[in-house]
Image 1: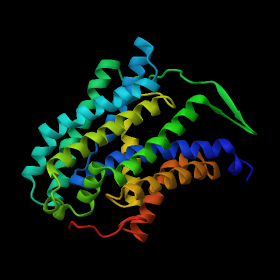
Image 2: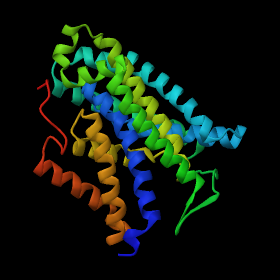
Image 3: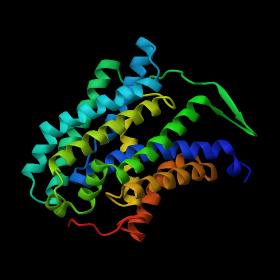
Image 4: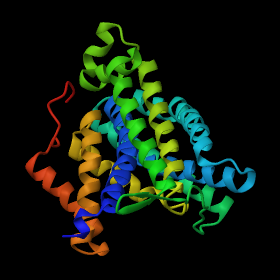
Amino acid sequence: MTDLMSGQLLISALVLGGIYGLIALGLNLIYGTMRLLNVAHGEVLMLGGYLAFWLFTLTGIGPIYSMFIAFALGGALGAILYYFVCKRVLKSSKVVEQIEANSLLVLFGASIIFQNIIAFAFTPTARGYSYFNDIIQFGAFQVTTGRLFVLITGLSVCLISILFFRYSMIGLSIRALIQQPDAANLVGINVEKTRLVSFSLGFAIAGLTGCLVSMLEQVSPFMGFPFTIAAFVVIIIGGLGNLAGGLAGAFLLAFVEVYGVVLTTASMRSILIYGVFIAVLIWRPKGIFGKERGIK
């Protein structure tokens, strides 16, 4: 019981929730606006992690700066992939099921390409670096400045994202396209532009998240898949296309995972994640925060 009241445990759950929230936010944007199953999303996070590692080890540029570079380059990669690949998938597919199936195959191929390019360039060996490792004391518990930075940054980006989608014109357009895709064009929303922004923004957030993850653990060419799985679990919990629900689902999954491992063993981590996933599918097939949407 003492362990459950640990401040370090709370920090760990909040940090993991912020990471899950960011990666799921990007994935939810892409699925919500286009119904594309981006199984390469974790690989974009991996690319962001390697960018942070490469910039720090070769030039001394820390992740506090490289995350902005990763955000920009991730967005650019997303725009290129959307324009030359995913846009064609959308045009060639007439129904939602066909879009999902075709995008799954195409983006799975993209994930394999990203993995092998990085494995060839850096070798499959996991790599890491040390940054912001000073210890800060908060009462009875301690936290490194790196974890504190990741926590503050993750929560800040989540808050900024909520405000962006609630109050900005492009954010409102994205929400309208997610909630009522058939009616969005009728009310003057530029669907093509909104999809491009959504896809690019989803990749940009994933790239930034990769920089944050690189401060917590080593990076490797195959690190992205577990994050992709966790992101899909999160958006199922929160409701497909429900951005706020996805953020809430991220912290719910993180707390279940962190505290569940303490109550059981580390080997139970996957069982806990998939157990929550299956329970939500049985109890609430549209997610805990999901609801009927304007697309069949």
